[in-house]
Structure formats: C-alpha cells, structure tokens
Image (cartoon, rainbow, N blue to C red):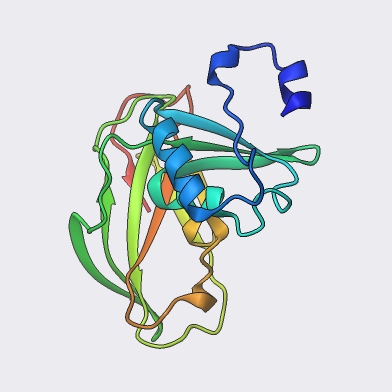
Length: 196
C-alpha cells in the first residue's frame, strides 16, 4: 500500500487498500467489497503478495462471484485485474440451454447484461454449468466476440470462476455460475457481433 501510493500519481480518492487486518475473512471481504462496488462501475485491482493477507483468496472469490473479470496480467510481480461492476446481478439464466460437452459437462443457460455495448465497455456474460458426475480433467472456457466475417475481435480464455473454480472441483448436480467480462476494444466499429 505504501509503495503503491508513493508512486501512484492519480486521484488518491479511488485507491482503496484491502487486507489491512490480517488474515482477511470472508465476512470482511464481503463487507468492504460491497461498499466499494456500490460506488464504482469498474475496478482495477492490484494483487501483490496476496497469500499473506488473504491466503484463502476471499477478495478474489467475492469479486469473481459478484463482478465480471475482464482482464488480468502481470506488471513485474504485481497481478493487475480489471472488473466490471454490474448494475444488476443475475443468479439464474435469462436464456435456458441444454448443451452437452461430452458426458460430464452441461451448459444450462446464460445471462447477458444488455445486448448493446460501446467501444471501451465491458460485455458482461454469465454462463451456467452443471455436471451429473465428477469431472476428472481441467477444462478452460473461451468467450470470443466475433465480427461479421467470423474473425475474433476480442476474447477471454480461462478456467471457470475467474480461474478459481476448475472443473475438477465441481460438485455433481450443483449449478456453477461462471462470470466473464469481455473488454470491447476502443477501436471496435459499430455493427452486429456474435458471441461464441
């Protein structure tokens, strides 16, 4: 915190440290993050040495369940993730599906927060999964935004649950809500696009 605020030259009112009390509890993370997400539409989160203050990753788990992670990457040893805060959260699919991937994985539906996005926005997609039996392999999900020529405009590829809910730990019969934020490039032309 001290190092970041020393070098950060932006508006210090939007810099909010978490994990001041160690270790972070699930209740503390939920309380602090509920207050933060009530005030902001987008979050840039810096994860650094997170196993010390938050060994159970409660902050990241809460964010993955309640926001839409659009990107993450590293700057040195600091992981930077960008999250979109939804205006409304759907915990049930708006569109029912019954798509099977082999014998073990079933896509039961999806929800899309709005069908119109602008360049620079984050498309918010929730996928609803279920498995009747334990899954023995770890699978990744890809979400691609395709243009009229079926070329990929942008994409997100990762394991479910923001990378924290791999298919090998899915309980049989339980619904898995898997949220994806897809950052729309600022130079994206107006038009109709397809999600794959």
